[in-house]
Image 1 (cartoon, rainbow, N blue to C red):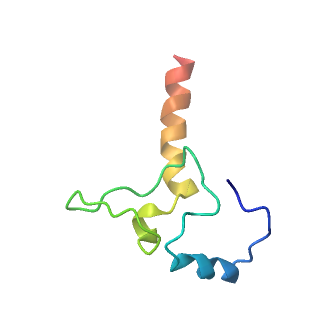
Image 2: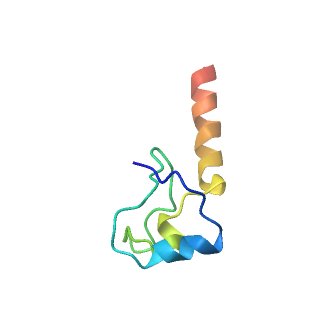
Image 3: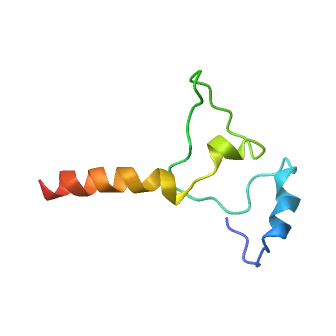
Length: 70
């Protein structure tokens, strides 16, 4: 279930420390992944590994597009 209200950029910090489920879930996003020791902590405070970004998605989209083309 998503939150219908607008959340400002700074307003998102209100959710960072809460233990309640995420108000909005992004399905299918690619996140940073494990660290150099193959560890992954899926928590809001670990945004370096758990936050989706376009930088992470771009390479896989290229690979999948090439596979589709062939």
